[in-house]
Length: 176
Image 1 (cartoon, rainbow, N blue to C red):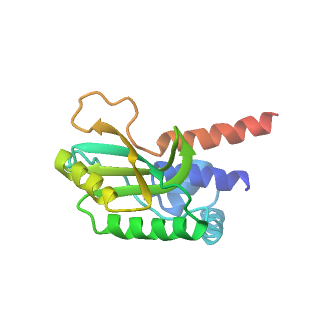
Image 2 (tube, helix red, strand yellow):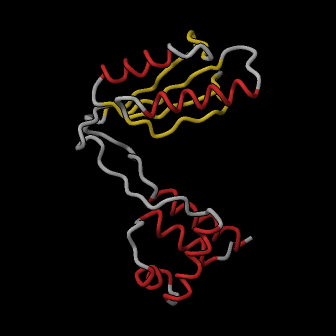
Image 3 (cartoon, rainbow, N blue to C red):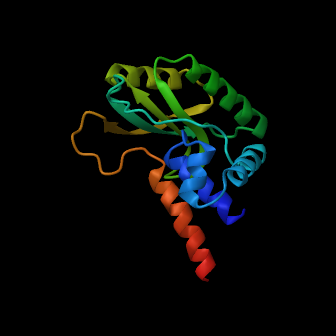
């Protein structure tokens, strides 16, 4: 990617409401150049969506849960794909906000769910729904919960830090 594209991505991660004119001013380029570059980034899939991050505690959520799951033994790739589809459909019908459902590896687990909950009862409902899925090893479901009511937050969910990191990473590449 060209440097201008890195800058555009970084600025949009900080504020996706910026117009092309505002973006051009911030990165020191012309508005038509920014428009062409933004369109290219969208077409190539570097920009998936434009969004904002609300204050979830003000919206009535009390908990953020990172739930780690282990798949059952001996699932074929087809069964893993089917399990993912079933889980996604179930979570889409849920009473809680599921931000992410992904496979991966670490800490002895093979999947993670990141979800917001209005209260502990909502989180218990997530656990109940997970127990309905035969493809999960039910003895291996662990959760790390964050209280959104806590007065101290070290670095809440935002893409600002990631945007700054992208630019620093690109600047370090140029120096080398």
